[in-house]
Every structure is written in structure tokens, then in C-alpha cells.
Image (cartoon, rainbow over all chains, first blue to last red):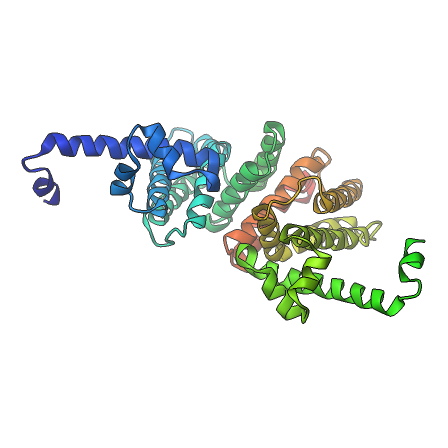
Amino acid sequence: MSTDRETGGRGPRRADARTNRERILTVAEEVFGKGGRSASTEEVARLAGVGIATVFRHFPTKAVLLEAVLAQRFHRLRERAESLFDATDPGTAFFGFFRNLVTDAPGKIAIGEALLEAGGDDGGDAAQASAGLRRAVGVLLQQAQRAGAVRDDVELPEVYALLVATSQASARTHLGEEVRDRMLAVVFDGLAPLRAR
Amino acid sequence: MSTDRETGGRGPRRADARTNRERILTVAEEVFGKGGRSASTEEVARLAGVGIATVFRHFPTKAVLLEAVLAQRFHRLRERAESLFDATDPGTAFFGFFRNLVTDAPGKIAIGEALLEAGGDDGGDAAQASAGLRRAVGVLLQQAQRAGAVRDDVELPEVYALLVATSQASARTHLGEEVRDRMLAVVFDGLAPLRAR
């Protein structure tokens, strides 16, 4: 309903605005993902080819922009997890997603830190999108457990804590690929049912 | 030798200075451990009962003070690890130290972050003390492996990565004790030799 009213009579301009918004978000994810705390909104505007005023029209504060970037990222990860629901091999789906998230972590962490720095809202869009991701991981875990690929006696809270722990360590401590993989192998062995080891 | 020369003729004053230095360090560990980035040198001076000038005489910048606090903390952890060398039960010693470090992590992380914020030196005292801790953990690991309590095919880099990962997650994500213990149980199972599971 609100969309109808907003676009009424000036569709093209709204479409431009939407394109700008998306371009800013895409660039911001890149910039904040690399630079973390030190990245600036000015740089985002410059690389997106828009004025700083345009950035602030869409995202009134840096915190709002960071929140949108992080929410978008969590949302995409959730979609990736959901695309693995009912995979033919739920064990491979679960462990593959876990590994993937840890491998992708650095950018996400930098953005999350920048958000904290800018005073992000714990109950905001990013937190909601993060909760959606967590639920999707819970489904993958359950399906892997039913398939006998993950032991029955672990639950989502500790599995998610391990996901966060290994992601953060991988991002912050500049682990080499080999050490990261060996670290994950220990965790995956700990999650495997007895007979699989 | 240098102690003799320094205290010669003005022992009490030097002793006062040493007491001040120690008091500042103790208070700083408490203050920075709680507040992280937001903690101030002024607060340290106030709680230590000295003037801000005294703090700056011993520690010219906030980064120097943070570095000294972190180095002291790593040093103490190393001593704790070393006190477990040649324990009668090397498995209990290794896993107990691991758990202990994760449980104690919050304050250490906050200090480490504040140090990064203040521009700490990667090759400084804290980094050296941290390397000493890592070596001591390596000895505990080896002794636990020889005793058959930890699988033979894991090495220090991934074990240390897991120690850092679970410590950081425990500190940052405000894990409840139960979830933290269940997370550690998964990691410890992953580290256990096959027959022990």
C-alpha cells in the first residue's frame, strides 16, 4: 500500500532512488568489509558515484548504513542455508555450510565490528536477520542429525557458538588455510556420531 | 646489578615508585578488563590513588599501559601453565587449563581490544608474553598426547586456534555457562583419541 502511494506519478525517479540505494549497499559491503572501523561513508559515496547527501538521504547515519549492510549479508547467508534444506545428503549440506561460513567470515566480522563502533542497535534489522540465519542453521543441524551425520546429543546453542567462535578466530587471527581446516576438522570430529570417527 | 645502582642512596623513593607502578597495573587490569575501549587512564589514576602525572611517568601513553597490563596477564597464564608441567595426570592438566583460560577470557579480550584501539605494537611485550604462553600450552599438549589423553594427529596451531576461538566466543557473545561447557565438550571430544569417546 505504501509503495503504491510513494511511487504514484513519479515512478522513474523512485526507480533511480532504488538503484542508488542498492548501489550504495553493494559498495558499502565491499568498503566496510575490508576496512572495518576505519572505512568512511565518504569513500562509499565516491565509489558508488553518488554525492554524500544521497548516501545520507537513504541512510541517515553510518550506523543505519552498516546495519543495512549487515542485515543484507545475514539475509543472503540465510537464503544459502535454506537452499540446502532437504538436500539429498544432509550431512554434507550441514558441514559444507559450516565450512563455507567460516571461510567467508572476515568481511562479515569487520562489518559487525564497525557496527558496534557506530553504536548499532541490538534489536535492529541486523539482529533480526541474524536470528533468521540461526533458525536456518538449526534446521540444517536437525536434518543432519536425523541423517545420522551429527551426534544426537548436541543442540543448536553450542553448535552456533562453535560456528561463531571458529568464524571469529578465522577472521581475526589471520589463520592460514591449512590451520583453519585442521581446526574445523577437530570441531567436525567432535560433532560426528561415535561410529563415524 | 641495575637494581643495586638504582636503589643506591634513595631506596625508599624507588620502592614507592615500584609500589605505585604495581598498584597502577593492578587497577588498570581491573578497569580495562571491565570497560575495554571506553575505560580511561583518568579512572585508573583515581582508583589507584595517584595523580594522572604519576600514571604517565610510569606509562607515557595509554597504549604502553595497556601493553603492560596484557603482558602481565599473559605472563601469569604462562606461569599457571608451567606449574602444570609434569602433572601426574597430563590429560586433566591440559583440558583443565584449556577450560580455565576460556572461563577467564572476558577481561583479557577487553584489554586486548583496547590495546588494538590504542595502537598496540604487534612485536611488543604483550606479543612476546603471548608467545611464551603459546609455547607453554604446546608443552601441556605434548604431555597430554604422550599420556594418551589427546589424539596424536593434532598439532599446536589448530589447538591454539581453538583455544583462542572458544575464548573469544565465550567473551564476546555472553555465552551462558551451560552453553559454554557444552561447546567445550564438543571441542574436547574432537581432541580425544578414538578409544576415549
